[in-house]
Amino acid sequence: MLKDTSLYSGRFYIIEVISYFLVFVPWAVGYLGAGEHGAVAVRILLSTAVAVFIVVLRDVRKKIHSLDTLKQSLAMATVHDLKGPLSSIIGVLAIISEPDMEPQMKEQLLKVAVASSRSMEKLVQVLVDTDRMEIAKITLQKQNIVLEDFLPQTLSGFAFLGTDRGIALTLCVAGHMPPIYADRDLLQRVFENLLLNAFKYSDRGATIAVKAEYGGNKFRFEVRDTGIGISREDLTKVFDKYYRVEGGKEGGSRKGSGLGLYFCRLAIEAHGGSIAIDSRPGQGTSVLFEIPVLLSGGAQIAALLRRTLSGAGKTKETSI
Amino acid sequence: MMKKILIADDEEGIRLVLAATLCKQFSIVQACDGLQALAMARLEKPDVILLDIAMPGMDGLETLARIKAEKLGPVAIIMLSSMDDMETVGKALAMGACEYITKPFDPHKVRRVIADKVCMHKGGSPWVIKR
Image (tube, rainbow over all chains, first blue to last red):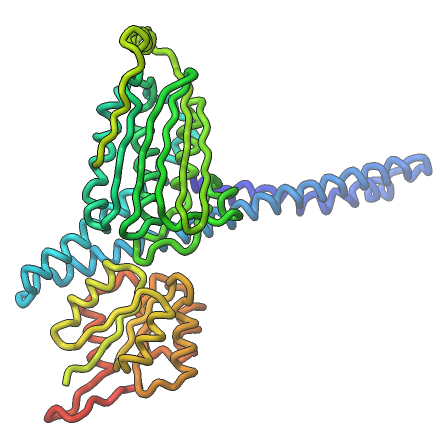
């Protein structure tokens, strides 16, 4: 992602400096040469052309430069975000083997080290993912995914967070869904990102509900929480790159990379779908996304037939 | 009596590591943002404050300025931040922080710095804060 643009910027700078001299070339040629009067107009024309060229070049160089600064400040922010958990890990390793450390404290410290490693891994993963999706326009590794199995599996990874923080996590799958033909890895990470956000901005006693339904050749998913919500002005920008909403829960979990929802958008759009968010401060947030049916060698058709023959299935609701 | 240290950092993991590092020698109080740190500084009258800079709401530098402005008695403020540019370090020291430790930090160094700033006289008489 942090592709080096300073090189291009540098080249443009050299061309710009050279062009400053080119402005005078037509006049110099005039002095050295015959100095015909008719040539004056040509000289003016040539000089103006070079001047216009310089102005355009300066503009391009400025743009590249500001992109450079943005990327630099992003790199700084990322480094800063990595240093926090890294400090915890180094700190834990430095003191955990001290002879007078109580076993209870040791256990707590180890938990900190594990959680910190995880948060570093998540940050690195999301950086790599967005990079992969932006630059290479990755080819999706699509496969048929049975949502009735996939969703409980994905959510079960968050069960401990729910118990730990006193937040209820529920899953509701509208019965007999056809399998979805999608990139399993990406879909899983979309859910992980959305759930992490929901937990990040929810307090004890809140509820996080995940819903999946199918209709009109589209899969619709919703991750709804009853957390602190997002202000109206932030709502329009949350899917932008590097945008962070201020004022989440206290503690390290509050800090995000500013890439989570941006990644979700890229991943869903890569599947031909769309993602939207709705929120009210103090009441909660709901992220909705749709993925259209992508036919996959008959598996979905067969499932649809089964679904039609057996009648609409029962909605299955589970508490994770 | 044990001397008191206020740990102000928005990351729970860091607070726990610091508390584990120092709890044998000091009594520990914690704050997770600048405003809380200021309130704790007034209430608990700590001898040393370990202060992070990038915190939500009121940041560490502003907290430092407010604590200094309120003249809360002899307190050694040690900055503990991942910001390592000379500008921030210089600013913090000029504002009255007595030491600046960058993250990732070595807990043993934190112990050494604190021991250096807070020296006990022989016979357990009151501690003197070195400036």
